[in-house]
Amino acid sequence: MGLFDRLRGDDAGRVVFLGIDGVPLDLVEDHPDVFENLTDIAETGSGGRLESIVPPESSACWPSLTTGVNPGETGVYGFQDREVDSYETYVPLGRHVKATRLWDRVTDAGRDATVLNVPVTFPPSTRVQRMVSGFLSPDLESAASDESLRATLDDFDYRIDVNAKLGHDDDKTDFIENAHATLDARYDAFSHYLAQDDWDLFFGVFMSTDRVNHFLFGDYANDGEYAEEFLEFYRTLDEYVGEIRDSLDEDTTLIVASDHGFTELTHEVNCNEFLAEEGWLSYEDDDHDSLSDIDDDARAYSLIPGRFYLNVEGREPNGVVSESEYEAVREELISDLESLTGPDGRQVCRRIVKGETVFDGAHDEIAPDLVVIPADGFDLKSGFGGKDAVFTQGPRNGMHKFENSLLYSTEADLDLSDANLFDVTPTVLDLLDVDVDVDFDGESLLAE
Image 1 (cartoon, rainbow, N blue to C red):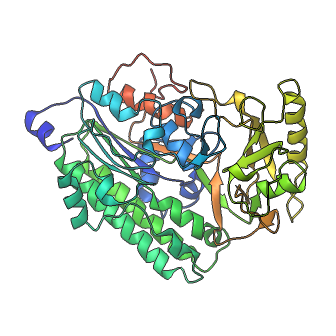
Image 2: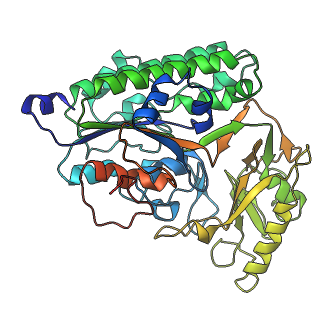
């Protein structure tokens, strides 16, 4: 409850949503001693699995979580998307999200929202009372919605994101210190505006969890060099969640959720290199580094993460796959992908999803024809610069996972038996008693 609501005695329901990017349910459930507060929330309220979306990447997940609709409606499919009728690509930002955000619906209903550090929200909205954009924002100065917010965050030594480059070093000490500093400043900002703002919806995201998972999850999974530092980081995060919970009154519901899960990474899979070796993809010359460099004979290409496109006549500028042969060619590609095995002999593709089964909406022109959900350990990449091999290894030892994201809430009457990311927005609106005439892809988890 915000300061002015406390003064005016407003007893309408309110919601605090805390995003913990990429935190897997298994991690929390396996370590109740580390996650004492989340464990207690599950025991006194609700807690369980939250299925992510296809593909399970933050750039696509957060737009869907905050709108309640699939990428066919949001228009954002991953960290890199293709321009319609072009081979040019771009990095989707908040302005590329076509569907209406949760906080805008709250504002339209005459309620107030404070929104801090949500990925894919740049530039910040001026419709809500306060916003600082998150992941993919160029700097704090342009990410903050007003000068007062910017000055306050400067005082907290707030930073948009962890310095991921530090994670590439063999010695992870500086990376871990940077991750903790980022987490601490984020908590300071959240607790400050939770106390100071007059909000009905407070929506904040801890992104540093994703960064820590990318560079330290393998240490955790194998009791490696930084396993204890990994758990200590999460112990601090859980303490911050507990302090925020303790600051809220009984009329405020706390929801803590991740956008996707995580698992150990053992091999990066260079999908375009695989397509080139199998005769699906070729380039105009040896000096190639982007999608626009593919030649007229290419039948397929890939964009991160695990999205596969046929080079279709009438859809791509130089498409070669005709409408009449589309299905046969797609089945051929599926067969080739199913035959892909890693250095350890395991099948790379756990599941191959046809685009039309998961993407539907007014902005599905750039939807992929296939999306691969990989087996644990195989992280699907898609660079066009050319790799020496299909399977390589890099500095990261953790990767996104579809199945094991999570949701915890102080609201005991949530049915999480079949919950997914699309359910979050309608659930929050239900808790706020905000009615909207919208066909969401999810539904409220609040028991009737």
